Length: 204
Image (tube, rainbow, N blue to C red):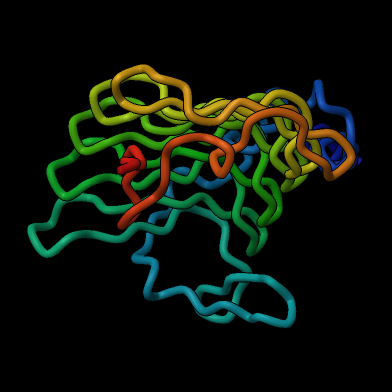
């Protein structure tokens, strides 16, 4: 067995383990096995839904797939290895500002997940482990002020959950545990959602 085959075996079995400490290392290694010299338009790939594999010219694809806006600016770029999404996945706004950046390991979301507003301000930051959100997830308004802060375990709320209005006033503040909520949720406060915007209830 040559060195390259041995490396791939260690990589595949190591990155498929459930160890949380391996995500960043494995994501780095994933970008090294994707063929950086191969770039095709995403529309040229064919997805076999039963397998979950992407094919290019009837072969499992290894390389990058891209899409463009009508003005020829790059819209998205996805890495693939042996027909599955691997490594970084990025999406840009039409003006070239980065909109989304996340990572895949065999079609499963892993490691950091970030999204930005059109003005370049960070809009969302979370972390995936084996396809599930874990730890603290934060969201920001377009002006940079904190909007939400959630604690998650296996994709579910677990621990303190908070949200703020753009003026800095807190309107959600509760703790989630075993599917139950303890504290003040939005329904208990003097605020409501109207057309996806938070407005203060006015009493007569």
